Amino acid sequence: MLKTINQQESTVADLAEGVKVNTSIPSAHHAALRCGFAGYPLNPRWNGQKVYAWNTGRQLKQGLFTGEMVIRATDSMIVPAWQENHHSDTEPTPKATVRLWGGYQLKLGAFRFG
Image 1: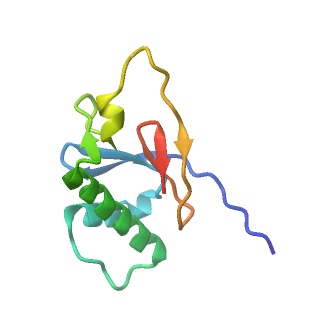
Image 2 (image 1 turned 30 degrees about the horizontal axis):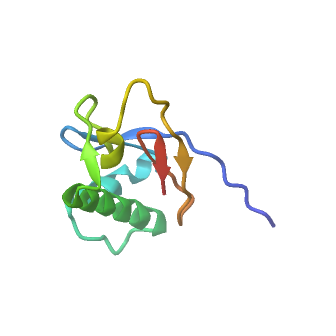
């Protein structure tokens, strides 16, 4: 039997005070996303979707520390550093979609990861 994966609408998740991310991870798993971003350990009772959300939050935090990601000053969204540094009002915003394990997409600015 084939399983159909529905496209989920992206929502804004608050990771910390003054830090937001645009994601398609369901709102039921946003707490796990925040836990990973805050550096809390993995909860062994979580299912695979929450573990994925936690790991995504951890990767976002690591990206901030390494300089790959920045917090955009205009709207407090996490975006890739190159997008913030090379953004111009005259350039069209490129769009890319990358699918990773779990069927979720993490949208960063005009880009979606995960």
